[in-house]
Amino acid sequence: MTHAHFLARRKRLLKAIGDGVAIVPTAPEVIRNRDAHHPYRFDSYFWYLTGFPEPEAVAVLVGGKRPKSILFCREKHEEREIWDGYRYGPKAAKAAFGFDAAYPIEQLDKKLPELLVNRDTLWHAIGHDAEWDARITKALNAVRSQTRAGKRAPRAIHDLRAELDAMRLVKDGTEAAIQQRAADIASAGHARAMRACRPGMAEYELEAELTYEFRKRGADAHAYTPIVAGGANACVLHYVENNKLLNNHTLVLIDAGCEVEGYAADITRTFPVNGRFNAAQKDVYEIVLAAQDAAFAATAPGRHFMEAHDAAVRVLTQGLIDLKLVTGNLDNLIEKGDFRRFYMHRTGHWLGLDVHDAGEYKVGDQWTTLQQGMTVTVEPGLYIRPADDIPPALAGIGIRIEDDVRVTETGCDIYTTAPKTVAEIEEVMRRD
Ligand code: ZN
Ligand code: MG
Image (cartoon, rainbow, N blue to C red; front, side):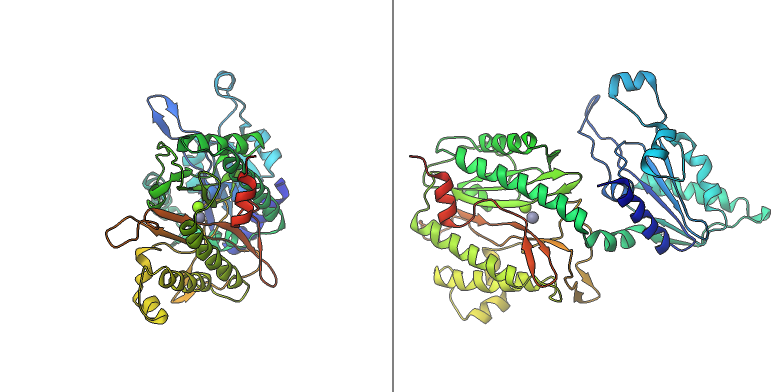
């Protein structure tokens, strides 16, 4: 992504906010314990508009006849740079990131009221961060205190996220190329985990294989905490302990993806620990795979967001009937939601800078209509928790298959390339 991309996004937002002022802070650094920090991750909205990687930075976009974008950031600091690394400082940041002006972050509270004077609207992610809400209220009050001098504060505060979410929802070609790179690396990680897997290993050993492949190929990090769930652990949807042993004749579910230039891949694969599906595992697997195919077929421009889910639920519910896990008429079972005992999540979500990306799913009571450039995951699953009424051969089977998909002009393209069919998985895991 070049700085021209970020500049173009700021221009677009400046048009959208009229003569208002938008305030976009990046994420704070977060302490892990005592004086050790979590690895720093910028705020996705801030990154989307700036590409500026440092903490303690705020973009202020001032709309109107002479629109301008201003960056507040840390000053150069010889000693801190010796300890913590390079800082652009306002002067270099202004040039490198194409801002019209840049100031030290310490000047923000002083300059903010000046920037808000006689503007009609203020755009901000209201309620996202209490400290920021207070800081902005203070700036507004500073303007209000000068009413007798003829200075007027904005009358309206708009949620900036609504505007930016709509922009972020549709990805352009440059973003698609980055998402493809993320999917390629994540796919390689999943294939590596399959090749490495042996009965008796611990779940974290497969996590290590993923991490190795992600970093070896230049991804920045895991995009989210990876799930490596052996056997019935796969039926715990957000299982992240990853510390149990992988038993022979069971499946392992891995939900993991990497982050590249801020963009997330989000892939799930489920495969037999010993490299060969048994009959019951294969039966369930083929149902989930068929559900995913049905969901892909329903992912196209003009279709609405929930159509993929509805298509998957239909195939999954028929599968549950065939497995004798539910009994009754297909349409009745779908209507009553009986599948939810075995399939309790949605079939997809937006994917982008956030793994559960920005964007409306529903406007009014209408599900969002898919259009070219939107990116969704397609991730049906079946989770058969052991219970008295579950046949032993099926008990503890948890399967999810998740791919990343871009809506195209006519249908959808699948980014993900990790082995997926029974034949592909058994082939990549074959050891002889
Ligand atoms: Zn997902
Ligand atoms: Mg996932």
